Image (cartoon, rainbow, N blue to C red; front, side, top):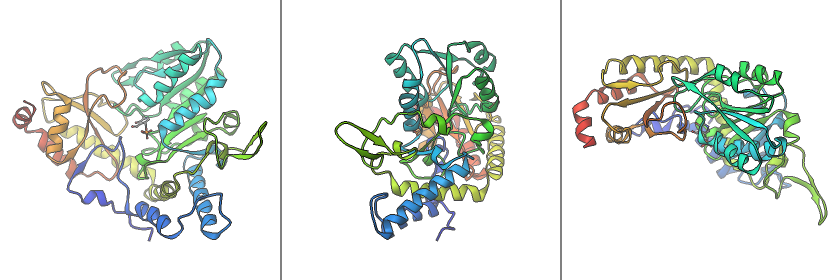
Length: 394
Ligand SMILES: Cc1ncc(COP(=O)(O)O)c(C=O)c1O
């Protein structure tokens, strides 16, 4: 049952280049979810019967799978959330709201996704915290500026590992070394890195990591919050309810140990089980192969786009699997809709990251390993028809 690696969405007569938003799911993941609903649809932690035990086992399997996948030290360091946004909010309001003191400083980059900016901005209004933005040069993090902006008040640096617009890959190992030498914690938004490259939290020495299952062939509704055990132990839940307490009365509340303390209420069981399968799937393909294929596809895409003189490519020197482009005189939204009329899915606009050094709206082509050279050829041929694009946009 579990070896059907084909993607039903690949048979829909569309060309999908919006993988940074979400990815397709292989049949084996979809079947795994169906299997839960059809054969052991029960809640976790609550039953004294076999199908509920099986649910617990399957959730545990995924937790263990995630632990191995990112090489966490302990299974307890893996918390199921809804998505990257949820994980980052838990980190900011569950940990840093208590940890940071008035006058402390938080360093972010100007090209972060809104999910790694807005919670911090809100936090800064709750406490007297200063948010400091590091600049980008030509879509890449300016590491000298980062070093210069660290002061003795800096307590946390929170950065995307790979950014979702330009695909800037940050040297997280070096940033963690630098930060830890000054007692600064590092939060990594792994939404665009964990699906594409091997992320080893111990090797990189990351303090907190957030990512989403749906961007890595898994279902929507599940995210991961990784944190070092001793840090998570200090984190405060911001949701209270069933499944997270040992006992309580009118005067006292005793919470379960981590990770359960942070998983109040019924989890998205089906999606967690599906996520376990998507990790198996990615492991079978292997990150060496995933990275190699995406690099080759991207190189090919750039070389083909360079043949079209009126296409502006913004981020040739970035390492991620996204390419952002524009055509002079055409609104990016119009170009996106034109491509849609040719059954090509891309994204246009600011991509939830409006503070980078590029202030223009762009069209983002984001690749995943299952894209093909033929799909790129089709896209490039469509883009070659400038006259038709201009007509469409009028
Ligand atoms: C870098 C980055 N961070 C955070 C997010 C938010 O992810 P989610 O919508 O799954 O919470 C995204 C989504 O595109 C992203 O690309």
